[in-house]
Image (cartoon, rainbow, N blue to C red; front, side, top):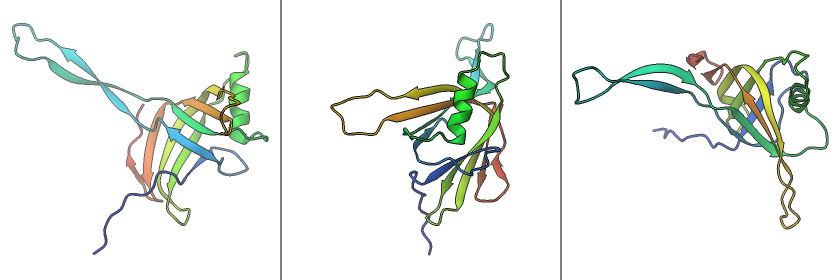
Length: 161
């Protein structure tokens, strides 16, 4: 009998739509792959025992990617710098971002595809002479919707937003 085991969270890759150099690598952390349906609380006149809780809009946290600061700019970082340093006279170009959880052979077991993502934050972590740790950069993205696919199959969660 096969025992189902969860895949480890440390083996993943990030790919930027339209990037010629393939997946953008070396990230130590990817967070914000979630969707939350807000609720609206409605009080009914004359009914004092409870409130009605109605479904509302879906909202997303921002995708945050963290990695050691690299000497060469990746396509993802170049896109971030261009968007953040823009004076808004130039259009901020939304793009798709895929975050894939990988099996031991490097094949995707699940992929989260972010629609119409755009860079909103580029942060370089604090420099500390007392720590023997790499400098960390954080890239943060807002996005319009998220869709999850298992392996190479069709979507299992329809896009929100």
